[in-house]
Length: 377
Ligand code: TYM
Image (cartoon, rainbow, N blue to C red; front, top):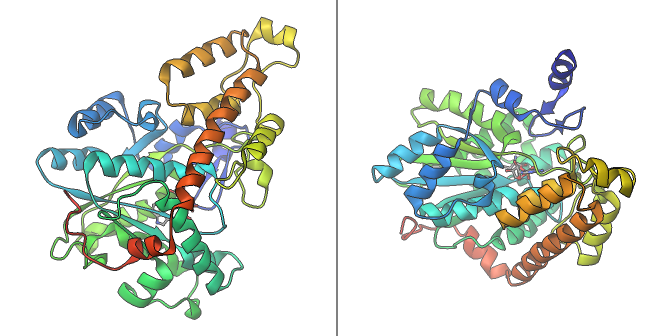
């Protein structure tokens, strides 16, 4: 108990750092400390019922596991009121890793299921402030990342993608990055899109429209602040739907990092690279020898291939079967990894095909400051 206390006290989850020294993030404690709620089976059923869509595997499997005021959004939706979705990305590197895809895949499902508009913020200014990048490079990375986001399949009729340097800088807040007024100025920039008045071309005269924000739980601190401020400035508090982290290949004790290519699978990886990374680096919960493994089975709590399959293998029955066989020692780590390599190679190849179809004109179309006449249609 005492050990658990110490370990949990040391886990750090902020927008800039995620670490769990004992290798396992204690999500219950995190929810408790942050003051959000857990998503239970009743909420999942309610979403399925309201949208008439089968719940996404990220919901079925508790990957999106926490929320703030989600029931309020669902109550209003049931009563015929709409809302909008808001999510984002800090374009710090050329290519996204699979963890970055999680909220976008899920947001695409929410957009299709609820038929609502979506705004996507690319915080190129954040990366200018925190990383040692030039303005031109931040802008270029934002455009490249936008292509990966568009490749997730968003509907241009319902989606507005904007970069802070172009949209916020020149418009609503009048911040110019050359001023470098400091990192203190950034949190309100991430907060502003939670309020419909930030988008006069989309939501004119609709200042009380509700906002739902899908993200991983690392972004929660920004929106805790936003929710504190909202009533004071006459706006609705945004609601949140938050996911667990897709772990690094080495496990939850380390973060996937752009500077360590062996810590993560990137959307630009070839199937050869995926195969090599999974085989070499994916932390195994299997036993040291085949004999021991047959006898004791795998420890699924720390096994990275199982964690990855939990995110990306669609078939619930197959996943259950693999878990059972592996846990009871009938399946070996090598066999689980082989299945994972096939799943990830297919996913990444599909993403690469979709991204190759995204043209500069399409990026311009998503980023055009324009009304979206059929955004609730
Ligand atoms: P960024 O670029 O660090 O991350 C983009 C989105 O991916 C989520 N994420 C993950 N999800 C699952 N597993 C992981 N390992 C993982 N790593 C990152 C993040 O939670 C995020 O949703 N400041 C933000 C950009 C931003 C934003 C927003 C995000 C601006 N407005 C509104 C969410 C909602 C950032 O740098 O995200």
